[in-house]
Amino acid sequence: MAMPRKIFVMTRSRWCTNGRLVIGPISFPCAVGRSGVTARKREGDGATPMGRFALRQLFYRADKGFRPRSGLPARAIAPGDGWCDAASDPNYNRLVKHPYLASAEHMWRADQLYDVVIVIGHNDRPRLKGAGSAIFMHIARNGFQPTEGCIAVRAADMRRIVPLLSRKTEIVIL
Image 1 (cartoon, one colour):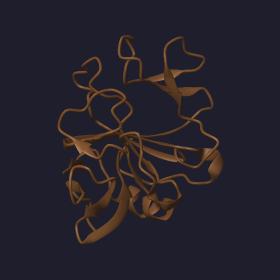
Image 2 (cartoon, rainbow, N blue to C red):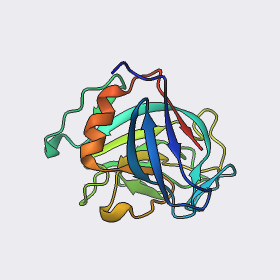
Image 3 (cartoon, rainbow, N blue to C red):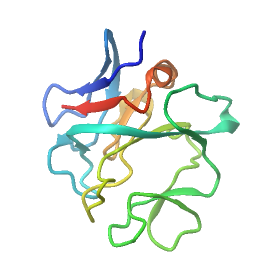
Image 4 (cartoon, rainbow, N blue to C red):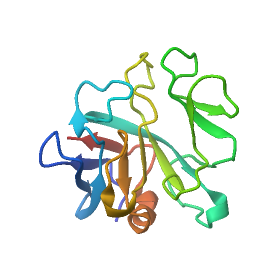
């Protein structure tokens, strides 16, 4: 399959917490935010932002044995990596190093959720304080439990998706 220009995330309604991630003729189940999808994303609202976004970068846990092949820039996650979610911090919605004085989630996790992470270009160019941070595509919890605003797929599906992505791929969240 050729590298697609667009991938789609579709839910039955804006309140649904699961849906389908569609790449050309292939469709995968996915989880979205605990508050569904929204056109007015705000920090901490638990919603997945609606819109069309670039895929910026791929992070992965090299110690877990998965070195992804992808057209996206890829970088191994280090134990001190974090992602700033403090709206008033100058590094809001950016990669940071722990220990970090402001609030920042840890990218190196004990569970498998961030074994592979694709950074979705929501609220990054330009960054608006409080408009949402750390919107990723990552590995789903068992049973496709809702996320805090990300998109989550099974690990096996992520292994199929990652090679299909490039710098030119956009994600459209409906």
